[in-house]
Structure formats: structure tokens, C-alpha cells
Length: 263
Ligand code: FES
Image 1 (cartoon, rainbow, N blue to C red):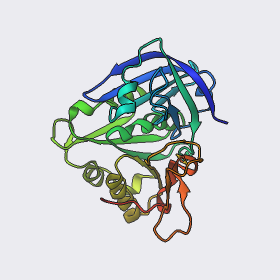
Image 2 (cartoon, rainbow, N blue to C red; image 1 turned 90 degrees about the horizontal axis):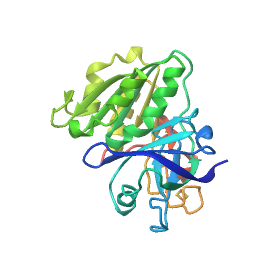
Image 3 (tube, helix red, strand yellow; image 1 turned 120 degrees about the vertical axis):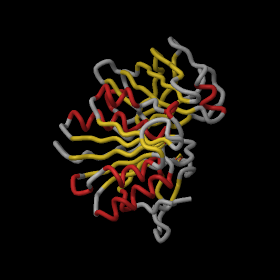
Image 4 (cartoon, rainbow, N blue to C red; image 1 turned 90 degrees about the vertical axis):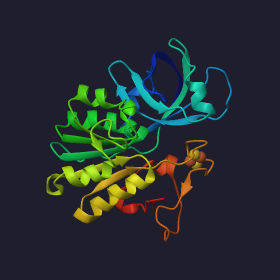
């Protein structure tokens, strides 16, 4: 059952031009969290704006009872969140949604993130590593200033392969081109992806080509976050009769069940 609590902020840093990392103590919610779930945050310490913002769990320390979020400043809500300071209390609700399934001990797993879509893959990588999986992370971004997650994966002991559009770090070009070049598909058991939908569509093409199973984490506009407003309703495939609620039935779905769009 999701809960609501006021989390004590213990760390809040700007880590690149428009990316921030915030960690808060959340003793009721943190123990319940699973990779791929999200929480709904009231972005200010005051009551405006009223709507919460959905943010993926980037990392969870269950011993400390803390949750870390990695977010990009994109609008009024996240701009307000940047002004929250250490020792403030953050009003959070969660954990929400259905997270990633885990493939089992010792599997070879590939994670593909685009931009700030890398955030939920950090916590996933940590849990996969604990399950003795061999994990490779591919991260696509505009330039090296967005390499925010690199140190996190290195600290967990995960192979990290960056791709930048301007060539300022790692491979120059699309992360999905790097995926095709670098990985022998016969050595992969499972693929997870999160980021811009065209990137995830290209990852799904790769998986379809080689018959690989995987999961995607979808992004939709979310108002309530708990399945009540229909703001995030979407058909997974055009021919489907029913809509799913991304906040409640997802945000993680089996890759084969979703039609992803390249534009
Ligand atoms: Fe309200 Fe999903 S955000 S139903």
C-alpha cells in the first residue's frame, strides 16, 4: 500500500546544467520500494503548485531509509523543486505503479537509458547486481555534461557505455547504434529500457530482431498517479480494445505488449 509522508531532505545537488539529485529520508515508503516504481512529489515546501509531480526512484537505501531522485528541470513544478533545501521536508506519496520484473540470478542483462530516463535504471542495476547478474548499461545523451549517472553505476560496479550526440564522451551518435555495434545478442538474456519513446522503439526493434525479451518504462502525463483521473490512459497497441492507466498498470510493461512510436 502506498503511503504519504514528509521526507527530510538530506542532500540536494545540481549535477549538470538542468539535472538535479535529491535524497530524503522516508522511513515508511523506502522499505516498500521496488525498481521501476515512482513516487509523487509535491514540488514545493508550500502548497503551490497543487499537483504532485511523478518522479522515478533513482536509488533506494533501505538500511538508511532514504530515497534518491534524479530529475530534470523542465517546468514550473520541477523549477520549484530545485528551490527545496537540505533540512526541508518534502511531501511524498508512494511507492506507486508496477516496477520491473527481475530475470533471476546470474543472467546477462542490458539496460538502455536515454537522457534523464537513465534514473530508474540505477536502482534496477543495483538490485540486478545483488542478484549476481552481469549488467551492461548504455546511456544516450546530448553531451558529456549530462553524464550524471556515470559515477553511480561505477560505484555499483556496472559496465557503463555512454553515447553522446556531439561525441564529447564515449560513442558519437545514437545509443541504439552503439547497442547494435557493441553487443552480441546471443549473450543477452533480458533488456530493459527507459527514455524518449523513439529510442525505446529502436531498442524494441533490436529485441524483436533477435527474439530477446524485455521491458519498457513508459512516460505519460500523470495528474493523480493512482489510477483515478485517466490522465495517463493509453492503448498499448492501436488494435487494443482497452486503455491502460500508465500510472497504475505501469509504468513498466512487457516490451512485446507495447507499440512504441518513432516520432
Ligand atoms: Fe490519474 Fe494515471 S495519472 S489515472
